[in-house]
Image 1 (cartoon, chains in turn orange, cyan):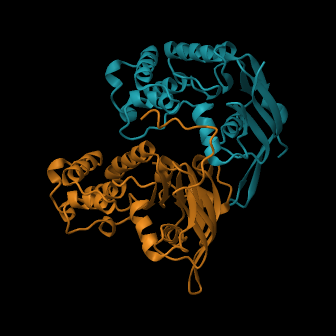
Image 2 (cartoon, helix red, strand yellow):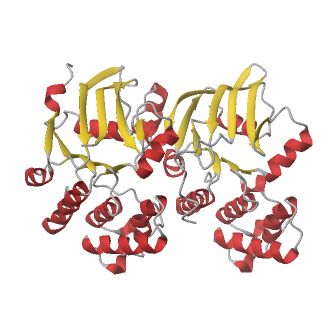
Image 3 (cartoon, chains in turn purple, cyan):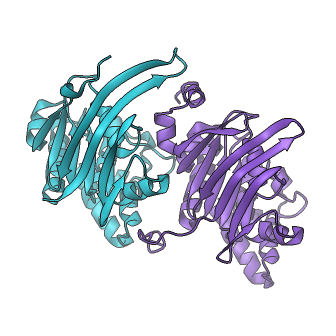
Length: 267
Length: 232
């Protein structure tokens, strides 16, 4: 573990994800426009802004769910950059299943509600090609434990779980195939503060230990501060400011970021 | 003599866009260098920009003009223009910031908070545990607290956890923002010793201390910011 965490300072790896002038229009209405950035392995990028700022639209384009109106998303696969929307649909779907994961704000969008907790997690391993039942079940138990769901709940359906447990189960389902890239849309939205803290700490540790890259959309600046290395601030579909998370939050330069950071009540 | 940090023409003004775009000039054209084994103490009245300057050196604030070159590994990184990942890497290995406040993360144990920077630098888990324990003991934090998260600790205890974390494996460049403020005399003396040991082991230090006695014991040089005050 400790060896994995020593990063080679001299080697400059290639970005895992590159967005170039990404634009999404809904008719005349702008979802997002001209968004460009690169994301490196192990890096966590936060996207903040109020509702309607285009952050969820951006996430949907990055994750391959919505096709952008203009621009490009490049994903590094088998050591080559591939353009996400130039490849055939089945190939893109396969990548979405195996190379990255999406944590939805509402766990119901990411879970299969009529399948047991163990099944929700094990299914992803079968997608990846695992066939050995004993190994799949053992891995499922391991992951349920990591997200603090007791082994005795493995055969229960998600609808028997509380909201916080459902969200933790969704996270296990997303992370079990060990994706290289994870997208999260308001991962703690709609949860009690006490449950949020527990989930945030869990996410922080998992992302760090697995060294995965992540894009996290949130309107909660405290979540962004705890989980992200870098921040992009969006307004009216465009990025108005970006940089190191603590720098953007502590010394905001743009009028909108200043408004956003000063509007928060200190907890 | 090895130059560890070079501040070049640092100018800072805050622009408050939502308060009539008021511009608050702080200082202008601050340049200085810090060598290995030096402790430069920032001087000047409240409001002269000592904390602002320190935060700029760490990359937490963005200067209006100027550069901050930090020796990182074999070469220099300009904290002002480097990519966020370069700055984070420099912070992980080279550049440390110590304030009197611990940023508490829910549920993380005290001992793990202290071990964390060592693990990130590749120290083995066993050695990190041993050194973390020694440091916490030296700062008079009883062993029964080590396995607890510091969320419920007193301000002074949290402060000592933060100091243990920062001095257990001191960064080559250390930025200190009043780390001894509000400590009792015994613990303040321990911190002064730790700062001195880090400096003698080669750390380059830039610090702010209000306590005159502490300042005299720590400083090898003073930098008065009054001379750089920007015209309002």
